[in-house]
Length: 134
Image 1 (cartoon, helix red, strand yellow):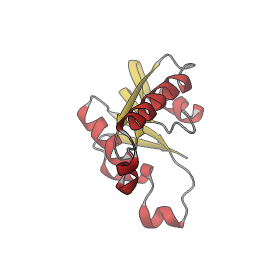
Image 2 (image 1 turned 30 degrees about the horizontal axis):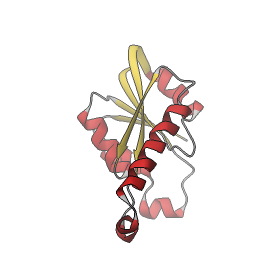
Image 3 (image 1 turned 180 degrees about the horizontal axis):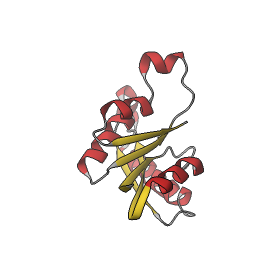
Image 4 (image 1 turned 45 degrees about the vertical axis):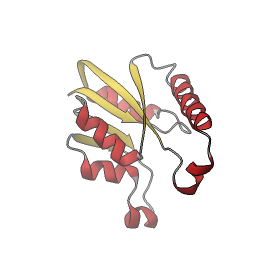
């Protein structure tokens, strides 16, 4: 059983009930679950054309959307960070007291075998236990 479980989530999907159920089953009594969304900053030439206020407003809109998606799950603490999804998930887990990451994954296709999905990268680089729910 784990004391602190991290469940990464994408805002376009919300938190998967099945993935959250797995996290709850793996959670030790008195443990906690944190949902993490990684906000990807506009990169390359796109970032040059965006006003700083627009980027800030977009980040705040993502924060609000995350709170809405987790409204039915008061036992889950929401966290939103800026960065690259896989790297930021691994870094967040390493810098906090996370002892398990429960992450959802889709059925891999050829592109995932060549490039690697976020779940595959998290599995490869995380220092803690990782459970992938397919």
